[in-house]
Image 1: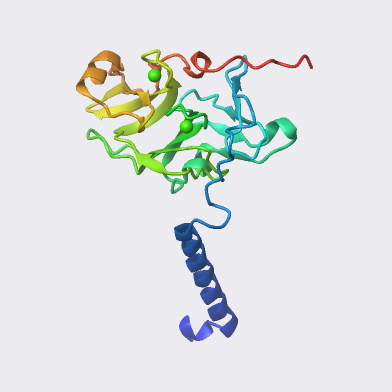
Image 2: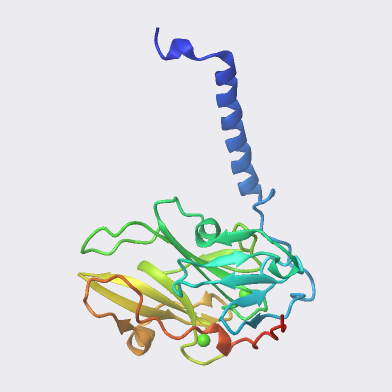
Length: 250
Ligand SMILES: [Ca+2]
Ligand SMILES: [Ca+2]
């Protein structure tokens, strides 16, 4: 007669099994074991020498399995970023920004890959921002730097929160021409104003804080057109830091 009366022993057991699996998965995440754990760091550094293709794709071993991976970002703003793991040795699994960042599905997700702290392993910037709310900017739900090597699910060796505002696009840049790649963030500042801000790569924290000096020197305001398109992103930065790949003739 009632909904409760229709529950069979099987569906009760199924419910328990699902709950049990979720609990196990949570335990696995806490213990750092299972598929979603960060990759082990091999002694002696990466086996693949990183390079950038003529079309701007990064080739490097991101997950430390000794195989070259390929990063594509046709969006130029991190939202369309995809990584083909093991791409050079056949058909590898592909991961988009949504999977790497781990957003809720309603968030806008974006990712950027560079060796921000200069330790030889490529790091992942992961950002998930909710829907635009109106005049006042919102905080991103995820904004962190995950130190590489990182897993195919985007899990790093450790991570650090980044002080980003309502971020709608990110890209690797070369602002101050030192040996560390920098991050450009396209941010909604409120009241119809968008701006592109800089965070500078550095050895210790990977990416520094936004200081008044950096704000003054590198921030570019977008025109107040109400058009949330990152038109004022800097030139792609990776080619400043990496050699060009030797493209094979066929
Ligand atoms: Ca690194
Ligand atoms: Ca730099």
